[in-house]
Length: 134
Image (cartoon, rainbow, N blue to C red; front, top):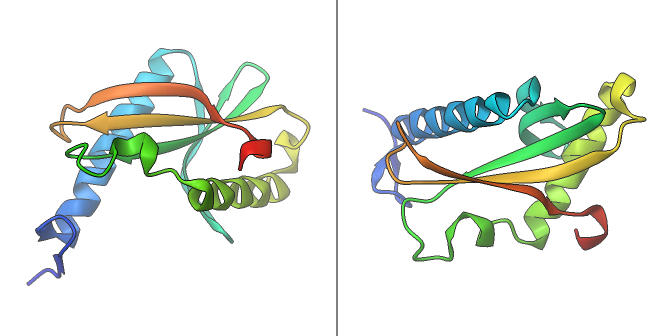
């Protein structure tokens, strides 16, 4: 029997499947807007990057956040200063591991998702935060 996830009332397996579906929808949205995917779920010391993409000469680190409800402030509110610091550290580790991208300017985007995970409502926040605000 799968382990229960007390935070959602569902199974951990269901949570992973929901996350994968939402991230795939976000990736499609961004690719349709002209971004090219370099990596998905790039794990490195310091954390994981949901998507690493390129838009022209800009390297874009994308955090995808799903919330079934806005009871706790929605997806944007869930990316607090601690989460931003972890994303910055993960991006730095990614750049160290992929020096061919180190000279490109970088930005951090956020895709908020809500509703049905198989067909989520998506809201793309370009340049959601900056290093100096992390």
